[in-house]
Length: 235
Image 1 (cartoon, helix red, strand yellow):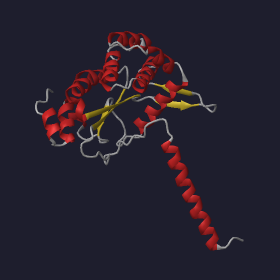
Image 2 (image 1 turned 135 degrees about the vertical axis):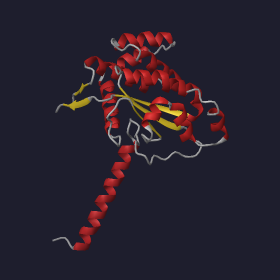
Image 3 (image 1 turned 90 degrees about the vertical axis):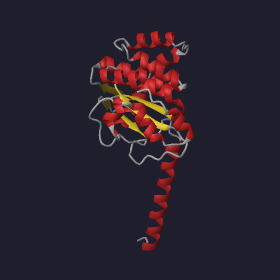
Image 4 (image 1 turned 30 degrees about the horizontal axis):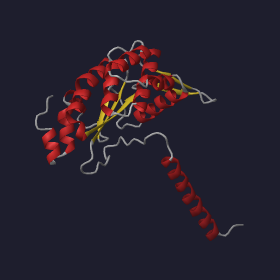
């Protein structure tokens, strides 16, 4: 029988080993780790983090991206970072063999459109171009591939082959699965699409959806740079 003191040492060693393994897994994760909780910490001078959880065929999502998110980013890009999570009220199913399937609120076409949006977000690094492309695509997503190609041409984006490859592969499915996990992690849970967080908090959701720039400016603080950006909110 193992002495009690030795059992304690073994238990401590196992706990330390598990902590180290978890740290390694998180550090090597290809996906960003999202904190959607109200206590999200933003250092002074860092941009406000705006996270938009939406659906590609949702009229309210279309309106919000077009009338609020894009204009706000163009007015306040120096103090704002936008994360887009196309998924909405979809459901993810994973078969025993690892195959992913999705059930989207507005049908299979929306699932395909969500995947195209997820691939655009993953591939297009320029935040303004990314947002312009997504906002253009959501105007008419009934044919997701055509919408992407048409909007990419309009905004002089040439790497459409990478987006198409992503959307037709397991990588696109994994991106959508990740968006679902991020969506389900929100507290309180999502009941309306789009749902928006500022620095991890849903805060005054009704005001965020109607007057985004004003809410971003309130969250940003009162440094000289922020005051200059927010002096004349155009919403």
